[in-house]
Image: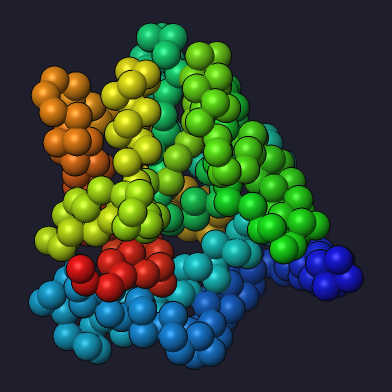
Length: 293
């Protein structure tokens, strides 16, 4: 608990220090944090470079290293933005954020089956709650709790909630998800995390089969809740375009396991398409591919 209190005090001190900097300095602080992490976290750097070369087989080692460095820099900027967002007045949101294709969300909610917001570790996913302010609808998000750091977990969830998210722990949440969908709520689920091989389904991702969660496809098929992809496009420091894409159709006729595989592949294909647009915005540090079978 003492360590948690110390870390929270440090984070709050950093927040206040960042607030007095001009915007250019705030962004610069994020870039420096990212570069520092790039140099310090050698193992994660190697994972990122390896992942990049598996996805973009035409990249040279130097090109992959450069992309990994830019990814780290963006992650540093993400951290600074996340710490500063609670201090951005709501009346300034329309200057900093724009929403594209919000009608997809409105149409989905008219069906009264709730909505699965398909999100990814892409651009600054931690400020996802901004979308709830524009959509005039709270977004329920599943977050893996930090079991050994309860105070830090509470602090981080309060940061997320300050932007409009309703955070529930990602542990045995099936009943909660079903209840929120019946209440016609928006449930945000990350679609790019590595799943345990015993629980996932192997689906191609940039040409290689990877263990992928069945959850999104299974829930979408069972509840008929529309699966609407969300992602942010960075347009400056704490300035984003929030893109709502057309719902991904969940096929329901045929063999269940094959349908899950086919529908999950659609999710991976969508993720591939936005990674190709802005490859430095995805979280390459994650061991998405893991060991080959």
